[in-house]
Length: 363
Image (cartoon, rainbow, N blue to C red; front, side, top):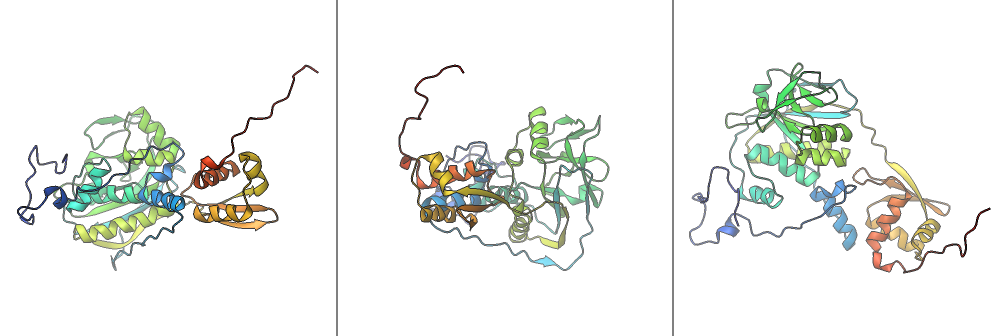
């Protein structure tokens, strides 16, 4: 059952000297795991991350999730990178400079977790960006800084006639409207879709520019569909990322790079951020919940359900003002009703026929 564990091995995987003779190889390679397979609807982009799944499972089981915040150790240096945007379709972009990285194979546990999620391990740097994406739902990208040829990053829309060779070695013809990351002049990555071959991480890489950003979902979807270039990254941007994780995911990746690539973090990230983090408030009354579902919810039960969903709320008269966190696609009271019924159990909704007029007629 071992597949693609190491891109260099074909058919036989050669264990290193740390493997104890006679031990179970599946256990040694940490492949003795259980995999939860989720089939998601398009509105549940929050479940494209382990943290999103943890929030949902904690609501279902009525337990509190606990997460550790990354605490990367930064060298007291100034970053020389400057980052700008020429489009409103990229509201935030953070770039962290990483130095003295050693490119090597990832540890067994990291390879195993990527394989369980359907991602092929490549090297420690690329694997860490993918691992963090799986945990936070925030896609990251690593550029070989020495190959950039510039200390300036400009996010803009492509110009007519521009091309880029993506990581898969294919020349892509760009159209105005495609979002691109540039070195100030030429495109080096298709924003939210795939990186460029010219700045790929390879065995000689030592200095890295680590990207964590937000891109317009519609722009990413159009580019990915037109080029038939769907990726784990584009899938998440299309469904909507949690903007609160942009910087935290970057910090976590930087922390892992110091641990598993012996790298050093050079100063604070360079960035711009125009995101409004104010949470949307949705109004819901107990009366409306009962009217829509046909089930006699109690006030205390509704409050417990909102707490289980980790939703902050305040009461105003007979109505609840619920703050919709950015990880949820909650737009209206209908979404709140759906979440309340889902967590409490669909089987508790009574069966009843809709009431219809006894006879029709023309006025």
